[in-house]
Image 1 (spheres, rainbow, N blue to C red):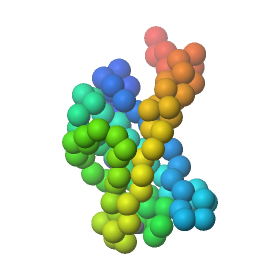
Image 2 (spheres, helix red, strand yellow):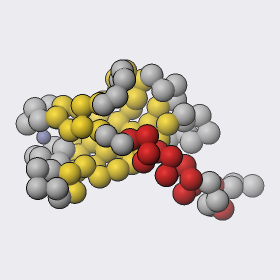
Image 3 (spheres, helix red, strand yellow):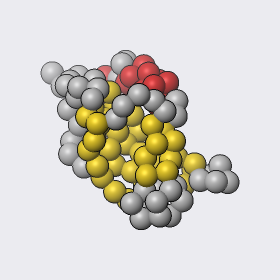
Image 4 (cartoon, rainbow, N blue to C red):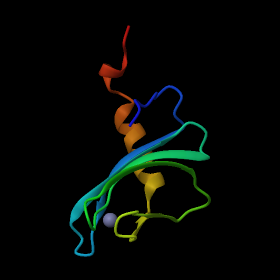
Length: 98
Ligand SMILES: [Zn+2]
């Protein structure tokens, strides 16, 4: 996955995905520079398959299908996750490069 340019990114998230038993066996990293085309790297919580994709996503809820096992994961509460991430990032002095 390409390096994320946080200055340009309108949207960034990185969260765990649960399988049927509620175990966090999967993960998704997702970002967008325009809130239309979303780039993501995902580990399927059901079969462990890793894949990357870029696509336009419409209105929520988003369902992303694994090309390996063809099961879909609901990317819910992604907005809250993003907010939290931004909030957590804000006071981080390591973001300052000068
Ligand atoms: Zn899968």
